[in-house]
Amino acid sequence: MYLGRVSSCGPVVCIMLSFVLSRSFCQGVTEAHRRCYSTFGSICRTFSTSSPKCEEASDNGSVVTYSELKTMLASHNIQLFDVRNPDEYQAGQIPQAVNVPLDNLEESLQLSPELFEQRFEVKAPTKADDNIVFHCRSGIRSTRALSIAHQLGFSKARHFKGGYSEWVEREGK
Image (cartoon, rainbow, N blue to C red; front, side):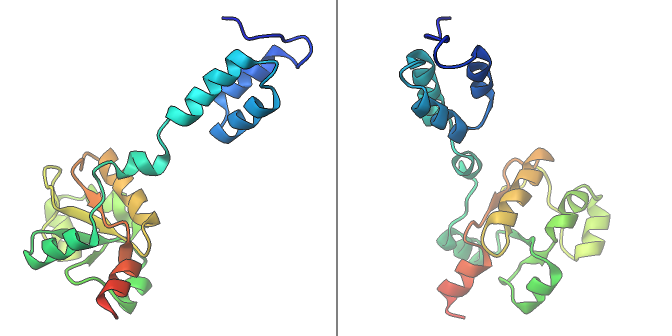
C-alpha cells in the first residue's frame, strides 16, 4: 500500500500508530499531514466519518421515549428498574420502578428467580422479556445498565434515556 512521501513528513511509525488511535487524533493527524499523506488522509477521513458514534450504537432501538414509558406504565406492561442510588430513589421515583442500583445490577440479574423475587419483591426478569426498561437520573447510568443487561443476554432490554429528570420535568413535579 502506498502511503505517500515519508522522508520529509516523519517516520512510518506515526502513520501506523494513527490507524489505531482515537478518531480525534486521527483527524488531527489528517489535517497536519494532508499534503504528505493524501492516501492516509482519505483513509482516515473515511474511518472518522463512517464509524458510528457510541451513542448511536447504544441507542439503536434501545431507547424508550417518555410517551412510550407512559403507555407501558398505564398498561402495567413494564419491568422498570431504577439504577440510581437508594438515596436518590427515596427522594423520588417513577411509579412502578424497582430500585436496583447500578453497582448491584450485574449480580442481581444473575440471581435465581426465587432470590430475585425475595430481594426485590417483584417477578424476576427473564432474557426473553421485551418490557425491561432501565432508567436513572439523566441516561448515563441507564446506558451502562443496558450494556450490562445486553451482555448478560437480556437482548430486548431498553432504557428511558431522559431518566428521572425528564420524568419530573414532564410531570410538572
